[in-house]
Image (cartoon, rainbow, N blue to C red; front, side):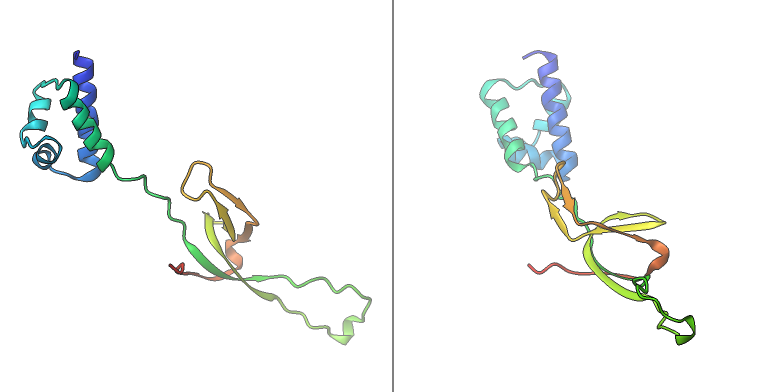
Length: 153
């Protein structure tokens, strides 16, 4: 194998060690029964054929799955305006002037300083194709409280 192949394998091994936190000697023992393997790779060892395949198979088998992006499931209590008074009435009759207290539950998809957005429905969570429908945008100044909820197992 050429230097590029050895270098490529070393890059994969180093990335695996970084990702998993596994010690080089532990990797070598578990992958090939050779605690010096990583140190030898760093000094230029170029495994061939079956040895290389065993190292690559070990990395593939023991590489953790990508972490799913965890979104916060929240309940937001916020104030909103009431519906307009839709009939003619006398101002002097003093209709009830008040705001509406709303409670909305969903996954926090935007946590900006001026606006928060929560979505009650998510699809393909944790992938590059994550989708949402029914998101509501709430002005931050209208929010009274936001508390985290725990998903049932």
